Amino acid sequence: MSSEGAEVVVPDSRVSLADDLWRLTMEHSPVGMAIVSLAGGVVTANGALCDMLGYEPDELATLTLSDITHPDDLADDLRLVDRTLAGEIGSYRITKRYVRSDGRIVVGDLSVALLRDAGGAPVHFVSQVADLTERQAFVERLDAAESAAETERRKAHAIFEGVSVGLLQVDTRGRYLACNDRLRDFLALAFPSGHRGLAGQAGFTYSADQRHVLAPRDMPSARAARGEEFDDLRVWVGKDPAARRALSVSSRAVVDRAGTASGAVLAYHDVTDLVRALNVKDEFVATVSHELRTPLTSALAYLELLDESSDVSRQDQQQVNAVRRNVLRLSHLVADLLYSTRASAGSALVDRYPVDLASVLDQAVDAAQLDAAHRGVRITCRRPASLALVADGMRLRQVLDNLLANAIAYSPPGGTVAVDLVRDGAHAVVTVADHGPGMDDDEVGEVFERFFRGRNARRLRVPGAGLGLHNVRTIIEAHGGEVRFESAPGAGTCVRVLLPGGHD
Image (tube, rainbow, N blue to C red; front, top):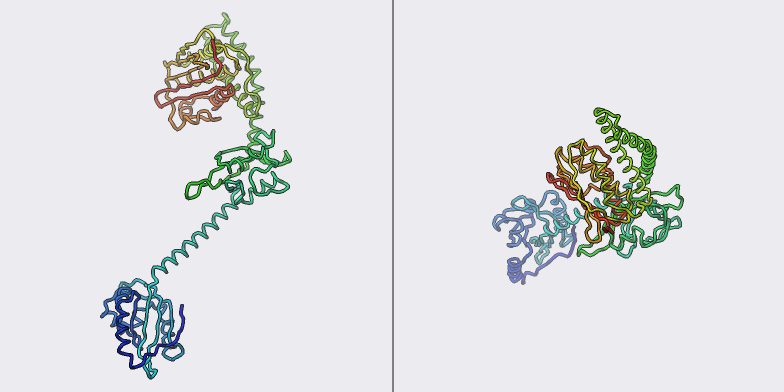
């Protein structure tokens, strides 16, 4: 950068005074100053310039303009010197780089004026140099930061538009701040007449079971704008049932630097194919399970008759018990599969009627004794004479069958499964405890998930589909109850079921 100005002429009568003032100015100036000969040698320099360039005054006096100027900037400086000496310009200003004594580069803002005598003959150059190194470094850092920010912005934009997930950002008022093309596709399905970019608009957005249109306040965007965070919120979008898409929506709150909520970001995953595949699988499982149920029931009835027959030899009796035990296990599996598909289809989960829970528990323990005896496990049972409930007795029997089967399966030979039924205030409480290997803490939170199989199940090769405890929790919660699961490595497992409304 350079600029040009008028030359400086000092009358002879004032040379002495000017010299004194000049020396005083140079000595105390915070800006680097120097007198440079017409040949480019440094005649004198002040302390600020010496500090800037890293030279002692006597060292700097032995150097020339070419010695301290960066090679790439020397030609521009010399060109301006020549123009000044030729009388084309009287002064100039340029930003140039200097080479310090230690080799480091200093950026300076150089102002140069040519001093002439009374007759107009050039005497020397007067130079002032302001150190711009820190400012230049800051500018370069700022430029680098802006370039990096722009690069990241472009990357973010490419990701934002390139992912197959619909992305949406809303503020606390529900206004749409940003969305990608994938989300616009979903909006076109839900709002074929157009969308105003505001959360909570009524459109063709349906609940997970597709039975009713979502109210404006129940829309995922409206809930997110209110500060809710959620995962896998299932909705369907589209007016035509055949063309609807199933979306799994997640939301995370966004806060500003002060920690104040400023809105939310939502992700919309298209899970239509997965949902339809699961529905096909459930339909297949339900069909197969229904087909198996009748022959299994018949087989169990005949096996019980054989078990009670006096015409069966001891050896045959053992074989009958083995078959009966495995058919019972298969029957429990079919029951779990049927109930799981029924629950996922949104059917009624329980059918309540008066039932004696103590009697249901007796039946479950009696049925489990066959498997327990085969494994060398003892079942102890403490219960009151009766405990009346208004509940689904068949589903509670399914709960007890699952809890007993698990406890027996994980108990070591010679172990004991303890079953207790008590009334605790307004609740009936069933506890099933074993002294098996227990579970690690990281698995305890997953035991009620559908199809979950823990490490011990795989290691001990315990048969099952991972539906038992999932169905247990589903059935108990449908009764308004609660299931508590406690387990630790080497300490066994205890499952406690609380059912409301128990009384003697």
